[in-house]
Image (tube, rainbow, N blue to C red):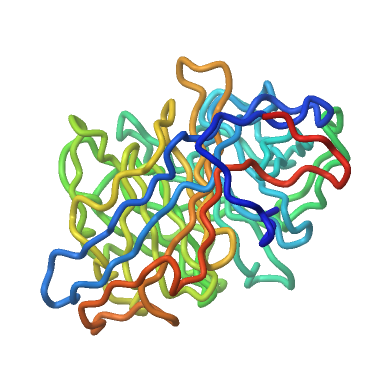
Length: 359
């Protein structure tokens, strides 16, 4: 967790104390701060700034390809993630320091190509559910994809707690109206709308929707339109994850190298809140995959292991130019760090009280 009383430190490489049994956490020697300037005059010259808070490696040796992530509500500070294809139907618990907190198996589910994870109301039952997106289709051959609706489980008790299981409520079979698509991005809104963003090697990122409020478990997705973002396999701008803000106002879509923000507008095509090229992610990931909101002003990113020894977890801070909800009629404006009361720091996350910090 953060501490408002953190002192300023000179740029350095810091390591969390060995007593926490965590892998080393390396921090950028320069605080990343990039301006996100919308190019379209209709959107105004609004600026959102994204700042790198810190990074951690995911300690679980079983987490090779962290492909989706959501924040827990039952256990604040815990995040749930899963592997890409090649693993069983497991959800893994971790925190912002990357600790291995154990795993649970989703009973009755199959993991063909799990690609993203979303959270929201269950709609068909009381409580909060996770929506596991078995939506990957690299060869564009699957006649349908599946969403598993799973009540949010209790977190495991630790790294060795991997034998527990949780039951799913149901599975939702979805078909594209125009034939198979590969996809790695899934979000769920509080209104009961499920959105899928495609990841086709050729062509734009297409947005499809379905309702989660009852109805048949086998349904055809509705095509909404193409998102206003640049896609290119040559530049790494292929969609690998998405998330929606806690108030359902803002959609963030990530690629291997960039973040793209959109204003959600009911059933209409989301409106770009920035240029098509988006904003460059201010950290080098082995292979960036997932994104989720951690509150209204933070993003959590995770990656696959790639050629590295462990997958990576990154925390980013969103800096708004004005207070309140972003809208399409903001006037040209620029806000200083002092006005936002932001205290930049290059120290790692707080250790337990009394624990010495090694720098």
